[in-house]
Length: 351
Image (cartoon, rainbow, N blue to C red; front, side, top):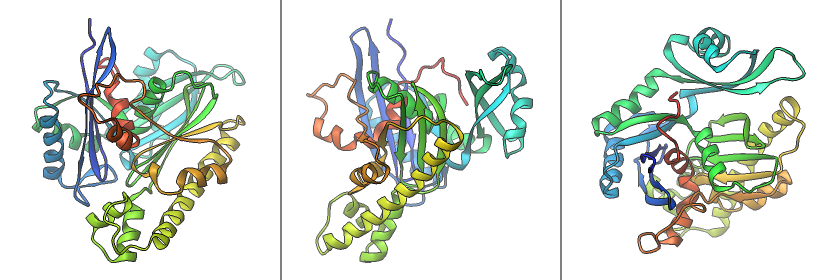
């Protein structure tokens, strides 16, 4: 029997991404992939500031998809979410479920009554008998209410609320099952946030959000070339380059790439010093900023680690009569979180 479909909905700072995947005995097939741009300021640090604009974008995408599916998986990130790996006394999932609020309170910098909690037990710590490593996820209820309320108004039913780094992990596990590297870093460069999730043997070891992203490039282009936000976005994507000096544009891209790399390097240094001595063997880049001019080559040179831009559609069946493969290749990095969300299951726990 086919698994019920879920729409993957990634609401970012600059755009909304929607993906639907059909799961049957024939395999996993892409049914829909769409992007709707948002006006500047509609979503700030995953906080919905202009609900009408976001609702219009989501509604238009769902209408264009011609989908009858109403179940949605979406994700939070940024200030709305705290992800911490902590050490606790060993206990079962059922025991921790009952005690989660008390156990988590010392690690959460919010009133525990103001958040929804979830957890994942990573396993016992052999070097410390009677203890285990646990990943705690706390999502602020008021942030979640914005998303759930908006979806409800559109007649959509949120069945899973994930967090960006773990949605990326689902995408990675599905698309790259044969990658042999023991330690990899999933680096998602969005418009306003960079998510880093470091995996060892397929299991998350360390996650971190950075409050910076590719919007900084857009604003630098606006300032330097004296253009509005929309034109700056088009210039960043390689369109409307009339009157723009390639040399000066290249300098903007390189400065941004250098800054992104230096901040990611700090996370890697912390990981190698405090979490694991195992070296990171490969970096998988995703997000709209992944295609920033010069970023991949600079990151490989500076960090001395192989870098690959993800293709979240690589393991899906694609009907070439329905989809333009060159377009899917172009938008692929931006769709990574949405694909991971569309691969979720209704039985997955909601934050």
